[in-house]
Each structure stands twice: as structure tokens, then as C-alpha cells.
Image 1 (tube, rainbow, N blue to C red):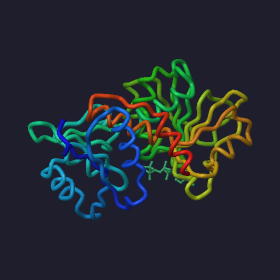
Image 2: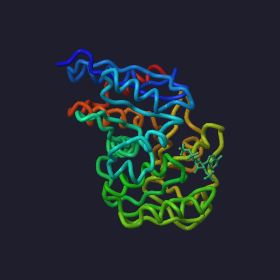
Image 3: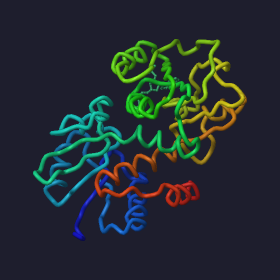
Length: 273
Ligand code: ATR
């Protein structure tokens, strides 16, 4: 095994990224010798920064805010999931030097939901938001055999645009965010509203006593969305820490061919919050 196999996460800012410690745990657990570092790419020079990394034994990289669309543009090959997401969070340097792009964010979400639920087959799912985080989640959700996906967003036209992209792949529709009269098995908040302590303008009727709510955000305290969901009587609220670990595990699988378990690192991160 090559001791210099190099991996990294690129972002700006990057100082607080948990990816290096997540991948260090994965590497130890699966007996893989590799280095994984955090690289602060200049805002206007992501591509040059990644090229330098690839020229210096870099084999793969995660990409985070604000470079996922730029990462998408530099790839020679894309997975279907990355192509449809319009964004790349996982870059791999292939043996012929070509760059392949994947997007594991939505797979991480589904992996975490499956950890909590078991199977998602037949579930009626409401996805709140229509930005990059939502777009990366639609195909993995549809491929998990859910019964139907409803997308709502503050700006409804963006939810409709997502439906146009994905309606060949499964049962997906857009609705007005404050629509009433329907409830869901699973409600996923992909918006950044919890960052500012706000809650999307959903009708409380979307939640019934056995609804599970998931906020892609996470933190020491309950997120604003999950607090709201609990107040409306949701059976369970889950934050996005497991999605973070899940996307990392899927990237690790792409690079190393072995899938690490999520539990060890998740418990460690939860304790550190
Ligand atoms: P990301 O890549 O994290 O998804 P984004 O592409 O900027 O970020 O998308 C942000 C999403 O959060 C959008 O769906 C946005 O709604 P609009 O399309 O109407 O802007 C949503 N959002 C952000 N703040 C919100 C708030 N306070 N209430 C409801 N939705 C919010």
C-alpha cells in the first residue's frame, strides 16, 4: 500500500471542516493507509489549487462551499447523480489522469434516513427547499423506492424547475409551500433557514403523529426547524450530522472500495458538538 495516498477537502472557509477527522477514523477502522487534509482554496483559484494537489499525488478530494459547481465544471467524467445534481462533492483522479466527479450528499442523506428507518420503500416524502442541497437529494430519494416526493420552496418556481429535471426518474411534484390538507411520512428541511433561526412557512398539517422530520443542518442545540416540528407533534426529529458522515462514507467507498461504518465516528462527533 502506498503511504503517500493523499486525499483532501477543499473549501473556503475550511478551518472548521470535520472531514479530516471523519476520514482519519474511517482509514483506521478499515486499515487503509492514507492522508486526508483540509485545503483552503482561494475563492478565485479553486481549479489551480486542485490541479496542484492532483499533480502532487492527490488521489481524491471532497469539495464543499463554495466550490461544488466549479468542481462540476472541471470534471472529465461525471456520475449520473453528479450530472443531475449539477454539483460535485467528490473528485477522483483516475489512473489516466482524468478527473471523475460524483455527488454523495444525497446518498449520505438516504443512508442516514435508512439508519433511522430501515427501508424507505413506500414512504411519502416532503422535501422543503429547492437549492443545491435539495437538488442533490432528489435522485437518491427516488432511487430509494419512496412512493412519492413533493417539493416545496419559498420561491415556488425553483421547486417546479427541480420537478422538470427529475420527473423522468420517479413520482415527483411541486406544491405551494403553505399548502394544506396533506401529511407526510418524512419531511426533510434542505433550506438554510435554521442558520438564521427561521422556519419555512409550512402548514402544521403536514405533520401527523408518526411523521419523522429531518433537518440537514446540525449543531449543539436542536435546529429551529426541528424545534418547530417537535412542537407540531412530530414523532421524531433528526439533525443532519449523520448525513455529513454518510456522504463521507460514500466518498470513502468510491476512493478505497470499502465502506466504513458510520456509528463510531458519529458517536465521536456527537460528543464533540
Ligand atoms: P444550498 O446549496 O444550501 O441548498 P441555496 O442553493 O442557496 O443553498 O438554497 C437555499 C435554499 O434555502 C432555497 O431553497 C431557499 O429558498 P429560496 O429559493 O426561496 O431562496 C431556502 N431558504 C433560505 N432561507 C430561507 C428561509 N428563511 N425560509 C425559507 N426558505 C429559505
